Length: 254
Length: 60
Image 1 (cartoon, helix red, strand yellow):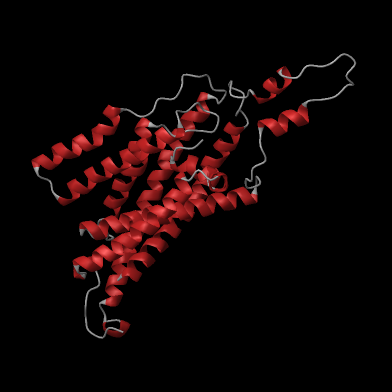
Image 2 (image 1 turned 120 degrees about the vertical axis):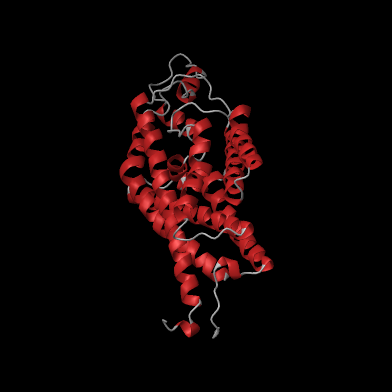
């Protein structure tokens, strides 16, 4: 039983994760790479100027450049996957692992709540996952490109997690009961994080062009919707298949 | 193996079986999400960087 849950979750995650990684590779990552070319142009790069300003020349100092000093002081050596195949491979792996994480979490919710994920309702699980983990957080924290001004990371992570928990609880409540009080509580749960308000990004200019940012927001939300619908429907289908196979004596087809 | 005709769908599981399966899945699932989406370690951050931006996790 536990094995079935994990097998269905991980296989569905592999399927949804690979499809999503493909969409990311062709539609999302090019925008990230493009935005990175503007990173540091919008008033964030103080490293080089600071180094140059602190540095006074004694009379008669030989001709020299500051590039090497500025580079090492502004960007400490840090591992990152090399652009090209390595970066794509890491992104694909990370997306599949995140997919497995989301699949296991909704699998756990299904177990705790006694709500099966089936082929028939997998679409609804997908919609709920999308609203909980993509749409509601994005309503307060718009999908963000590298180089765009953003509020404190810790505060944004806390708000993101809180919003996902509250929105997910609302979906779960409505899945269990459609009583009048449940609608009232669900609306309150969904609205609360937005009434509290997401951490506000500083009002700084960004060198990232607006059309890149709007394109990125629309494409990431669209990609997330595809991810969640595939995950929900495939997870449900696999649950049905495993349940049917185990209900047949000795695995012999009926 | 099981030779009787039993349904192994969720409805056939006892409460304790569901809690055990759910807890294990939740533990592993959250570990994967924290590692890919939230961990501050620069290797995890840089390896999963594009995924974090693409999936809407707060990044940077």
